[in-house]
Image (cartoon, rainbow, N blue to C red):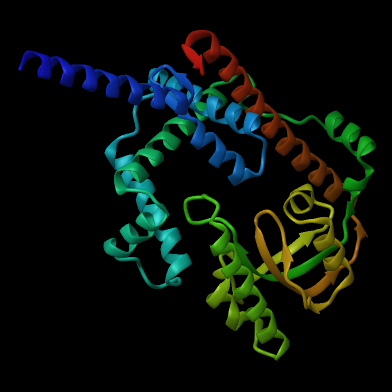
Length: 331
């Protein structure tokens, strides 16, 4: 009997050590008590189409900021989390049911579950994001340069350095239908779902070629919440074609097509973000701005640039500081 018990103890210990070894091998890093799994890094790399090392560094920074937030910033309340859930629920209701129809709790939970999340995990992710956001905003708001100022001399120098700011660049007034490769939680959909999107886009384009009105097909297909609820549906507004935000999101092929087309562009364009069908409503010809308009444009340009640079620097400085204070274990 004693031998049998000892044998069972040895088996149990062996299984425990084996399971611990498996868990250890699955880990990429540990930040304080937060574990980053290798599988999470791989998924993050696939989602953003970056290297494993880049994904690992980003996740490491996020965990550092989260641990820092838990130390220095008050925990988001249940009310804070529920308010954010309500906001996201409204966004999802626009996406899945239209402007005037609310999602029921059952429908909302079903969407969460379809994205491989439990409601507990979903709320935990919201809490974590809120905590990090408040941590970064706290440092930004109380920083020495929280109130940005642009002098007349700064504006003059900027216009001398970037004379193109004195012109309204070529643009288009645009409508679009967007088929996203990402679900409501920002996770990339699978290959099978991507193929379904490509088929939907192809069918949509054929209907448009047959004369079905563009704004009738937007509610049926589009995943872009803003243009989906524009008037008319699908309306994006005016895009300046050399705007960095446009050139970053759209491919060179898309920008060229927008420049050279009028009306429905009879092609489905694919990017890392998803699929697009465009309708160019009108062309905006380049024109020179007045002195006052040019200076206002230059000032706005500098304010946005300073804000972006300062926020990036604050994040970089915080991560560097936290690396010296928080225990990190790389496996």
